[in-house]
Amino acid sequence: MEKYQQVKRPPDRNAPDYASKIHICSAPVYYHNYMMGQLFASQVHHALCKEVYKGGDPRTVTYIKNKGAGEFMKKKVFEPGRTLTWKGLTKHATGADLNPSAFAADFRA
Image (cartoon, rainbow, N blue to C red; front, side, top):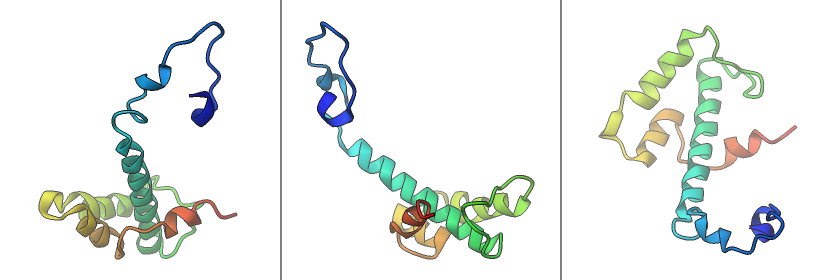
């Protein structure tokens, strides 16, 4: 925990706390899923900005009081249900395969 998470253990504690972390010990794929979810969210946000906000800046676009944003999500993300694989849904919603471009753009100045 101290080495990888940079969290100092409480004084006088000498228990195998690392073993209580399901994300690290028995199910490390959780972190992969979180990252894929974030990649998808960023990609959908950028696609929504392009389509609904006509190329609006993803850093400043908010969905407040814009029914078009809700319609986009309904049509592109929720309506297909389980008719598409996650790869197919990504392509349907954003026009591209899942990739890190939008996520990386979220961190540019």
